Length: 376
Image 1 (cartoon, rainbow, N blue to C red):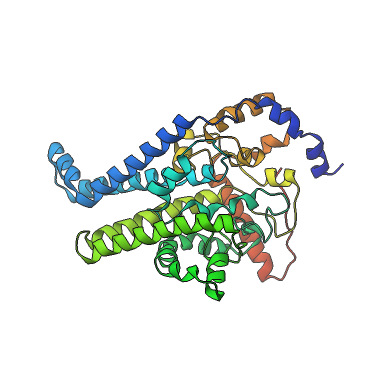
Image 2: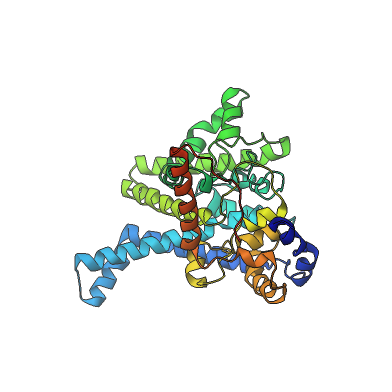
């Protein structure tokens, strides 16, 4: 029996689902509290850095005005604001998995207070559903997958570097190109296909929206357009100083870089475009149950249980930890699910880098490199 066949024989999705059958109910109060507190902390810390009054008060209370202390306080509040905004933003991942009335009103409120101000309305992420489809996972139809472990290491650096360009791209997309897409034409089709998705594969082509989807796009696009030009007016009239824009760009780039690193650790990225089985998809994904405090910083809102999320995409984030512990306690010792556990982010990323380095050396030497072997 091959390794893949053995894994398949040892894994029953029906049995696994029975173990966690009571953990699929969403608790709205958790969503509202977590998101609003995260957003408040982000706004508060951002304002502290921008205005500086609280930092000066802390320095006065400590009786020190050293540059080192000032720099540490500014850096600390800046990183706190980025981490809090990052957590608030990642509720977009839960929204795209909501069933009707899972958390009433949450999607609208999130778009109003987070999606539109961050120029990342939820329609951009609706393509995430393709990432969970067995026939699409790891193929050209999956915009959230690149064969990073089977590519030259430079591709990984290029992928991470995009974090510093995306804020400008988002501003152009919503402030300049949005009104141009209100008329049928080649530009409209290009924007819809290539600039309307939150993906990591720059070659991904998004299917054009249906009429129903287009109405949602229009509302969210209009909100981003109005918000962006309102900020621009405030900057040009001096109501907001230009230092605010610099801080906003640095914060956005930090948030995007955090998300890029998290995404890099979500999978092993060993598939090169071929269709794979559901079990292959599971074993290519990673869980991080250890070091929960640090994990909640770089992979918040349940995303450190990424393999479990691929197993049960509709399970609410606040139950993933409980579900993982149950599965580890009740599944057989040789269950493939146990192979999804990684000791930490660096262990996974170093594995990808090592394989990419080996691939790069093999490619330079003109050697054939293997593709798609699974861990374990």
